[in-house]
Amino acid sequence: CFGHRTSATSGYDVYDIAVTGPIVFKLWNNIGITDSTDSGSYAFIINDGDVTAYLYNNTGVANSGAAFYRGDGTVYLKNNLGYNYGTGAAFSGAFSSVNYCASDDDTANNWGGTGNREDQTFSFMDATNDDYHISDRDTTVKDFGTDLSADADLALSDDIDDQTRSGLWCIGADEVNALYRSVGTNTSNLNTA
Image (cartoon, rainbow, N blue to C red):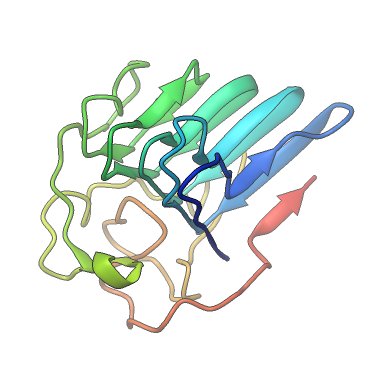
């Protein structure tokens, strides 16, 4: 699934998880981009105390707000790439756990966790044209993720292009070693169990 919102004057969230009632929410292999200059704009936001959210292998891109933001709820992050090309943060809020995530700033490891990578300079296929697949030349997230194929909370084994992940996993929505295809609109990666 690919989400992209733009705005020059007001905040827009790409993936805004706020629901009524207790719910387990799982989101994986997505790219969310917000070009808004509003500091309240987020690529991924979980903002409800009744939500337990698992966000795995996503790529969040923001300008002024945050790529990943937890306002409320219980939020577990694994293998997420947070990139903020403007004045905001890659990760912001009080996450329950953050493991094997990467950021271009110093926020990926603010919650302890394992395998996090901070202050990275990512190599994307074509960021100018919103192609945030990881370049095969990347040395920051390629093969630095963790294998989630047997994860107890959200087992998965493919990437955003439905290519099988194997061997050493990449952080983010795209597995570099997979055959590169253009981003589609696959909505099968959204689950509310």
